[in-house]
Image: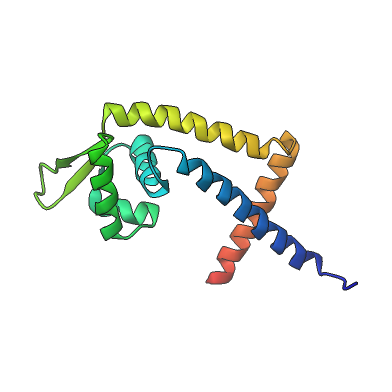
Length: 146
């Protein structure tokens, strides 16, 4: 039997577990009224308030063409509306509606419950240790990019 370098094994386990968590989150979204891209826009508006449509893509890492499509879909569902900027007619804001806020109140609670279920496997101390370890490796990888 070949001896596997622990760092290679850690990387493999990290990637596989991340993929499993992502599959679970995607599966959860297939049962809901909005998809992951729509949720990303709604979450931004829910937590940060109205946003210029032109800047949403940069904040959630989505192309401008996709943003327009997503905003159209959310507007059709009654979760947001467009509001012209009073100072600059070229700018348009996306604003969450009351129905959108109510939806997100419920959906955020569901997401948090799912996340708690995923991490129920760990103790509170293990969660804190994982945060520290993952943050360190992420910051180190970020530093290697420069």
